Every structure is written in structure tokens, then in C-alpha cells.
Image (cartoon, rainbow, N blue to C red):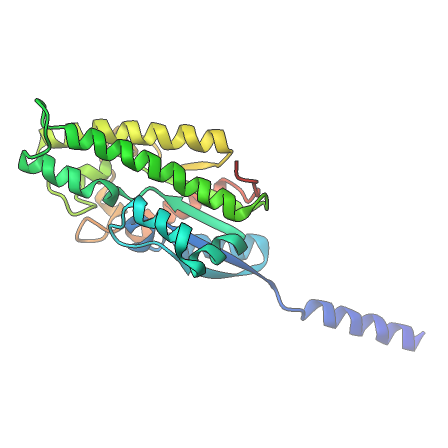
Length: 246
């Protein structure tokens, strides 16, 4: 009996001391994830809730357009491998995708009788790039399930100077109209693919009202720890169900 007891104790000790599983977490996006603590806070939630260790592969870049990210998914071997092997992927559409047309609109050089031709063309192109990005992720996953979550920023990005633009009321109205259409496109596409979406932030601070200053750091651009926590907590509330991308 003593021998049997010692074997049981040893087995328990070996099991309890075994290393945690490692999950790879790939970040695809821009300032929303890059210039905040959203990622680190969400990773901490996953580690706590799933009893794993998170390894982060950061493919987010400041002001990088969706077209660049799509090319990286197509030709950057390390990026492609990271997506292929990831247990968790968070994605947000980079507003830098329309930096050039928005700049031309502000200068009055956008074309058309309403000075908006370049905005229409720019948003049409970035919709193609966004769909191409998700197609690329689906192709790299090749039917393997993973936790994929999409974050959609509200029109506060145009009102708070989050992306470094100080705009007039009229310019904000124009930009918000195009952004609203892009938001609808992203959410409809995500629904078709079965990807859960998190609004940043939930109403009334998505499109209805400007978020409180406490959601941002002192310069009013980067998300504060409080703002980041709201996003990370929102991602946590979506759960951890893996999906097979369509």
C-alpha cells in the first residue's frame, strides 16, 4: 500500500508541475492595438481564463494601409507562418488605408463636383483589400479552427484626433459618412464569415457620442489603460470559441 501511495503522489506531482500549453497570438491592425495596452490586457485575460501562456506576434503597424498588410500576408513568410500557427488572431481595419484620399479631400484636390471622388475610390479599394486580408487569413488557416476577433472603431476616430487629423465640423461629417459605410461593410463581411465583432467603444460611445477623455492618454490620441481595459474586457466577453474561417 505504501508503494501504491508513493506512485500516486509522484504521478500527481508530475502532472501538477507540467508546463502550460503555449498559444500564439497574432495582432493585425494599426494604432488601435499598437499604441495601447489592449493586446497585453487581452493576453492576460486569455492566460487566466484558459490556463495557457501567450506568445505575441505583433504584425500591427502605425498608419499602415490594408493593402500593405495584404501584401505581407501574401509574401512575408514569417507573417504567413504566424497566422498559420496562431491560436488567437485580433484584427482591426487600419484607417491609414485612406490617408491619401482624406488628405487630398482636405486640400480640395479630391476630384469631382463634390470634391469626393478620391474618397469613393479610396474606400472602394480598401474594401477590396480588407476582404482580401480575411481571404488570405482563411487560406492560410486552411480549415483549421482558431479564435479570430475583429475590432471596429467608432467615428470618434475622426472627432478626437486619434489618427492625427484635426478636422472641421464639415470635414468630420463627410469622413463619418464614409466611415459608417466601411463599418457596415466590415460587420456584414464578418457576419458572413462567422467572425465575432467588437465595437470600440459600445454605444453611446461608438457613433452617438464622443468617448470621455479618460478613455485616452493625456494627448487625447492613444487609448489609456482604462480605454484599453474596456476593449480587452469586451474581447473577453466574446468568449473563446474557435471558428473555421469562411
